[in-house]
Length: 418
Image 1 (cartoon, rainbow, N blue to C red):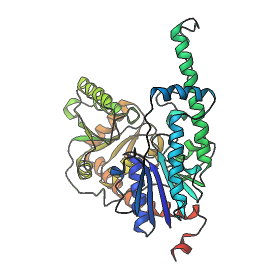
Image 2 (image 1 turned 180 degrees about the vertical axis):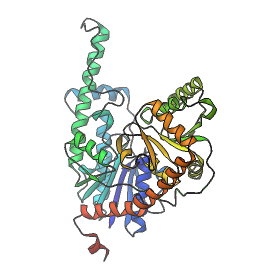
Image 3 (image 1 turned 90 degrees about the vertical axis):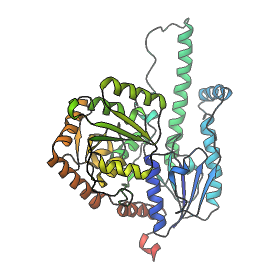
């Protein structure tokens, strides 16, 4: 196949998943070109060795005060705001090049700005989308619900603060309704929408009124090898330094472990909020937890940590799939995870990890068990490696995405390969 890939991703799980797909498809002889924006993180994706060319088109999402005023007027008329208009123009320019390139299929990926990408509207060839998750801000409470009404206090039109709140709320809700409308239209523009878990598929159905197709990811064992190194008394966390990844919950949980055996928490993230990291440091100091945040570390350092830690503490909120637990498992690292989201499809309780409720007390007890029960830890470690080798291999993941793309263009893989 000749594949056009589109994405607007920064560093993180979405980029790692796309890197895996591009690498695997290229190794099977497919020709690939990539289209992305100037605000995406192409350095983190690092696929130049596998693709014929990467096209980086300019895109700006910075808006001025005059844009904000114009957006409010457009919102009252249910018209798209400035950022949507810029994204439509950007995708139109990408599509002009893709449509003229003689490609068999578009393989679109998520957008950091809107989740559900707009490129599908403009591309005329068969098109598949790998969607990480719907736009959480629009479709769920994370942590606040955008549709929640104004508080009942001071509902007096003669009060200037109330009038300001009223109109700000009016503009915000109108803009959100337009975004929902536009995202649903984007969803309907694709021939096939692929998702990373059954949990994600249910979210897509709830958000857009139609289901996707589960296409599980896998783990490249060459990138996450088991090194059989001695385990050290520290716990790892993986995920960007943002609230929904819940490193604060990890700190609060470890604080409940007796001080004599309380492990250090090394949290590795690709990006984050500096102010939030400062809050985490203050929290850890107040709870007497040794907290060490590390941002954008080299891959080899990450692998070494996964091979020397005693446990991965996975606290993300409603994680759609979660590559981190499987990456840890590939390195023989047991996982203690909150039993929600896509993690329930990858972590089997008391087999390759321990699943707990979102309660610090339960998480603390589970971590303490892994730290103090060598028999349990060894069994979880062996099973962790086994389940990745049997169910979550890189090759099986590429089989799934390759089959999905062939199916999108309406042709059988065996016929194309021959």
